[in-house]
Image (cartoon, rainbow, N blue to C red):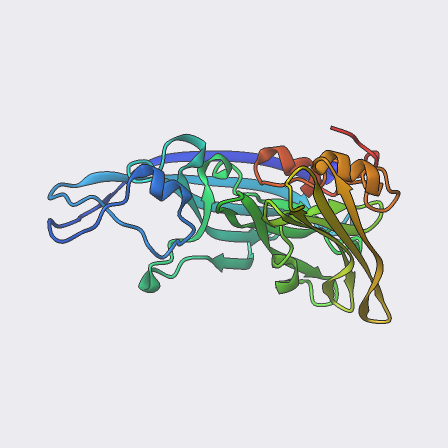
Length: 310
């Protein structure tokens, strides 16, 4: 499939201007803006002058949906606020549009992620991903046709990421949105096993790994592994409870429930055996804990060795 995709990148540094009147306007610090998860709260510096506000970005991919379909053009558009966000890679940027054109230049998909009336300026992401905006053309439901994904969010306390997704319908020759894909946190696409891995945390003492498959037109969890940890009364060791579930006849069934005493997390993983387990292989970097360009390999339908240690 790699021969079917060509990538073009255009970064347009375009000074757009916003008039902001002196008044009772609150102002977040750069650090607060960088870690905020609420894209509906954007506070501007009070000023009576016109200030450059945005750098516009576009990212373009040319790819075939299948070998029998001509090349289509996929274009992501977004912007980075150079003045009012946190510094560097961890500043805030926004994905505003996704457009797809067929071989004749006819628009076949147009998505606007903004809602200015509700102060939604696009899908908020950290600025380190504004160059590509997480745009990938990849077969995510493993039907032989390429689909399109783009960052829905990348931020928060754990810097996790999730994606909006449009699947190709070969009968009607249109893209349609997959809401269930957007629920997959930190997705890693495995084109060999035809599944998607997800890794997430609810804090230092709770963690979960999930395997999704495309069943009945939806992405559903077929395997789940979660652990919780708790110190003993003297705090000289920790108990780790691992609960593994599997989808059986449409319901999740517990197949393992073990509590292990260990010195630390690494010791617990060695004892429980999931690091080298044939199904889970938790030693693999495909279970990435946070987003960024280092995960691009896992979003292009990885077909390499399954068992990879860091």
